[in-house]
Image (cartoon, rainbow, N blue to C red):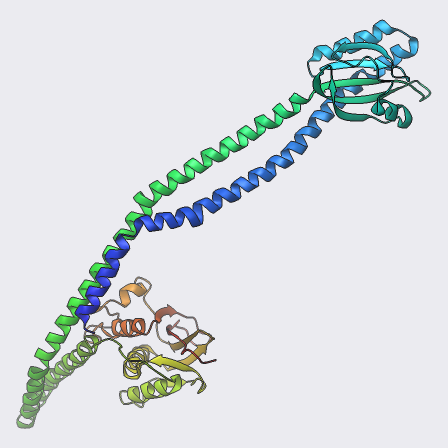
Length: 452
C-alpha cells in the first residue's frame, strides 16, 4: 500500500466523519440527554412523594395548632357550662379560614356547639369512641355533609384530667390536594423548562460548538494527512535524486584529501565531507520515512526485537558515550509486528535517547494482558517546556542544535507505531540520581492474541 492510497483512504474516512454530525447528535440525545432527563424526572417523582408526606404532615400540624389555641378557653367554658363562650371560641376559629368546621361534643357524642360544616351526632362514631377511651387525639379523612374533609378529634379534659368531651376540627381534604398539586405543577414545570433548555443547549451547542470544532479538527487532520502524503512522495523523490550526487561529492572530496595534505585543505575538505555525511543521513531517513507502511506482521518475542535494535545502535556508540542499560522481557512476551519496521522505530528512539543522555539510558518493558509498553529513559535535559508532543512528532521538527538533527526520527517512529495500532508518548521524568529531569519515550503496542 503506497502513501497515496493511504491518503485517499484516510481522506474518505474523514469526509465520512463530516457526514456523521447528525449521528453524533442522535447519540448525544439518546445516550446523554434522555438518560439525564429520565434520572431528573425520577428524582423529581421521588422528591414529590417525600414532599407530599411532608405537606400532609404540615397541614395536620397546622390543624393541631389551631386546636391547641382554643383548647383551654373551650375546656374552661365547658366546665363552667358556658355554652355561649364555647360557641364564641368555635366561631373565632372558624373565622380564621383554616378550619372548614369546628364543633364540641359531650362524652356521649352529642353536639354542644358548632361552627361551619359539622356532624350533629357522633354517638355511633368509632373515632369519637376511641378519643373517649384513650384520651388521645385521633384524625381521619371523612365525609361530612356530602363533602370530603380531614377531621381531627381532640379530647377535652377538666382540671382533674377527666375527659368531659371532645372537639372536632374539620378541614377540607381539597386543601391537602391543592397544596400538593401546586407543588407538583411547579416541580414538573421546572422539569419541562429544564428539558427544553437542555434540548436547546444540545442543538445549539452541537451545531455551533461541538460540530464546528470537530469539523475543524477533522479538516485539520485531513489536511495534515494530505500534507504527509505529499511529504512522503517528495521525500522519496528527493532522496533518490540526492543519493548519487552526494556519493560523487564524497568521493571527489576523498581524492582531493589525498592530493592536498596541507592543514587548511584538510580542514575544508573534512568540513565538506561532514556536511555530505549529514545530508546522506537525511537521505536515509527520508527513504525510511517514505517506505511502504507495515503490511505483514508476525508473532515473535519482543526481547528479540529489542536485542536487534540494541545491537544496531551499538555500532553508532562510542566508548565514552552514555551507558545503555536494558532489562529484557520474558520470552513469553509476544508482539504481532513487522520486525524490521519496529526495530527501525526502536533504533530511532534509542538514538535520540543516547544523544540526549548525560551518562545512561534505561530500557525496560511493562506488560499486561492487553498491551505492552517499551520505555526508553535518558538522564538528559528533558523536553523543552515550550514544545508540545504533537509538535515534536511533526516531520522536520527538532530540538537539537542546527546540523545535529533532521526532525524525521520521531515522526518516523510515530507512524510506525501507529501502523502497529500502538501509541508513542513523550514525557519528562524526575530522577533521584540526576539533577536533570530526563525524558521517557513510551511505545505502547497491543499484545499478541492468544498469549497470556
